[in-house]
Length: 97
Image (cartoon, rainbow, N blue to C red; front, side, top):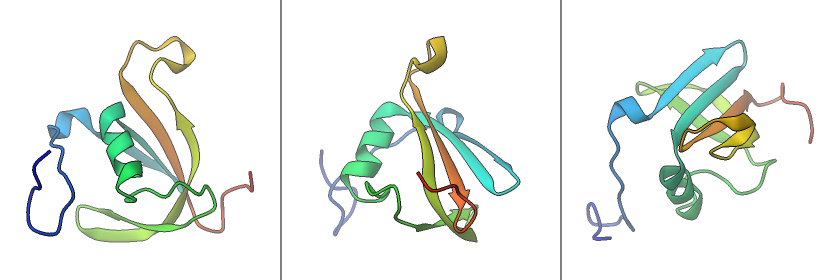
């Protein structure tokens, strides 16, 4: 892939309709394309270490530090979707895994 701009490694674009999220209590649930998930891990945007914390912003506003507590591959639970389900928990509230 050609770089999106100077200093970037690569760029993928998806319509907003392909990325969904809900926020309930101290958890955020994200559904997004599998290839986008792969790129976010490859580029280091999402940590590979399950214990690592990272900042989350929604519409440009920081909502806190989170970590990944669940990651479901496409087709999990009989779904025919090509989307990944990722569950994030606010730091200090996720159960240790």
